[in-house]
Length: 158
Image (cartoon, rainbow, N blue to C red; front, side, top):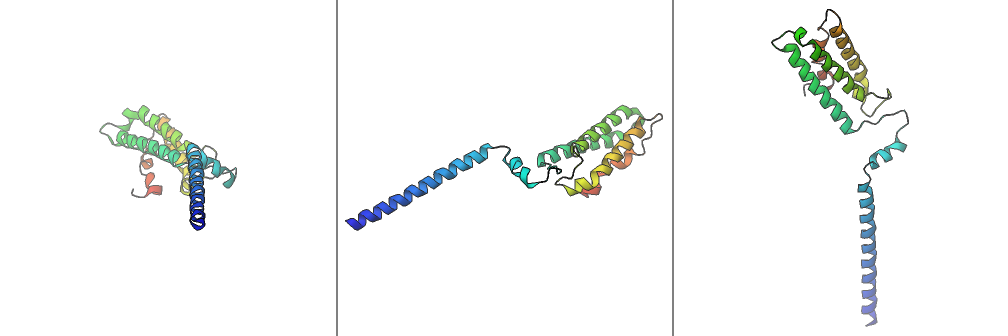
């Protein structure tokens, strides 16, 4: 009977240790899941201060806005009416594109997206030149045309 009691005692000890471990694991997971900014907090010590981490949501949001305004620009430039009839709308879309692209380059520091870092400055410059040429009197729409194909430089045929 002494041997059975010892075996039972060891089994209960193991069960208690496993229950305690499971309980601690559950608490740790709950605490981690509750921290919405955990990834941002972990990135803070891993990246230099002059580095800007762009989240997937920031990139998707800015790219979605750019795509929308690019489609609108395409519709206005290639529609049955002349671009002159839609000059105000074209300027508004170009301004919105500048704001959207500017969201990706708020600090001027490198980001975790090297393709964006490499091409964003020239893309912003092209948008600015196109907007300024459309705002002139008389307006010149020639620089707005190539913007409609600018996505291909980074995204290929996607």
